[in-house]
Amino acid sequence: MKIRLDFLQAEPIRVLITGAAGQIAYSLIYMVSSGEVFGKDQPIILHLLDIPPMTKVLEGVCMEINDCALPIVREVVATTNVAEAFKDISAAFLVGAMPRKQGMERKDLLSANVRIFKEQGQALDQHAKKDVKVLVVGNPANTNALICSKYAPSIPKENFSAMTRLDQNRGQSQIAVRCGVPITNVKNVIIWGNHSSTQYPDINHAEVITAGGDKKKVRDAVNDDAWLNDTFISTVQKRGAAVIAARGLSSAMSAAKAASDHMRDWWQGTDGRWVSMGVFSDGSYGTPAEVMYSFPVTCANKKWTIVQGLAIDDFSRQKLDSTGNELMEERGEAIAACEA
Ligand SMILES: NC(=O)C1=CN([C@@H]2O[C@H](COP(=O)(O)OP(=O)(O)OC[C@H]3O[C@@H](n4cnc5c(N)ncnc54)[C@H](O)[C@@H]3O)[C@@H](O)[C@H]2O)C=CC1
Ligand SMILES: O=C(O)CCC(=O)C(=O)O
Image 1 (cartoon, rainbow, N blue to C red):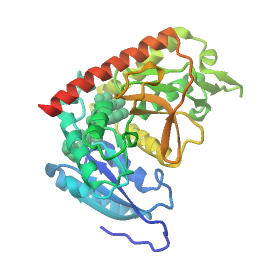
Image 2 (image 1 turned 60 degrees about the horizontal axis):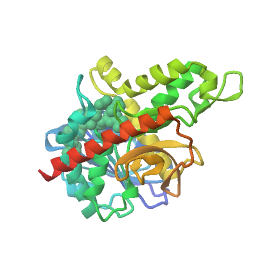
Image 3 (image 1 turned 180 degrees about the vertical axis):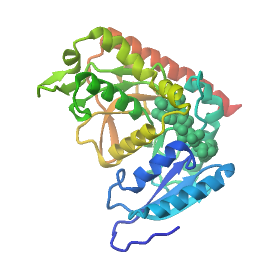
């Protein structure tokens, strides 16, 4: 499919979405193609990858992209060929993987999904641009991102990230509802660690503009430590499972929105706002180095920087350590699965 619009001057960039026939991609493709992520003046060539049994579904998705008549979409490369999918790409959303079913933990997907990310790491290494920005969404996202980067040694480790933005959005939304304010009034909710039930949603540095217009610490505005230290944390940690129980399918619309938010902020910058991203840990805050740990970061010039100097109390310390331990365990299992 080709749509050519001569008035768009910028050179198109190639953007890959894997799992393109799946449910997250169904929302994500539109968000990316509407200009939300890379900018309304940035033409794109969409690369869509899925597996051969999904070819017909992928054809239907391509028909719909055509029918959306999207000004920035110059071309669609829909394929089941990994080399073609990764050729010359500048950004990748690695969504394609098996989702968990009711009763499973995300790490139960590890052995099935980690091999996909080994293969795609190798494909990035061989075919993608060296400054490609990679967002891993497929679970277990942090460890899949680590494996992807391990098998793409020619691409800087800083170019790989895992999605914890959905958890951040969930946390901010819980606080906004509790305080009775719009979501835009809440900032600096942090997700530390793994995108799993050990993640630590931390409000100790978060602020809210209250309904009365005052800027307050979230802890003071909510004024209910029992709710903040227990119900809030477990609601965010278990939100994915709650959606599966309700829908019979895992979160998709909200996951696509979070993937768009994550890549947009990385690409276009956060202007000082903190966002949470799973990134290659340098050991900041006493976390294990060389795992993909979610930190608060700011982004500028297409680079992320970990927010430093935050006070970590004993309650938080224990939670940062426990999710870090899980990531180290996953790393060991994933490397063993890739080498088997
Ligand atoms: N990090 C996060 O916050 C979130 C992560 N997820 C994860 O995202 C992943 C995708 O979820 P859905 O879109 O709902 O699943 P889905 O099952 O609807 O779609 C997945 C698609 O990936 C394709 N696929 C499988 N293996 C592939 C491969 N090797 N290459 C390319 N495509 C492949 C499948 O054929 C399918 O079309 C799951 O692992 C899910 O757990 C979902 C929500 C949030
Ligand atoms: O919970 C899951 O395993 C699927 C989707 C997900 O990761 C989430 O909703 O947070």
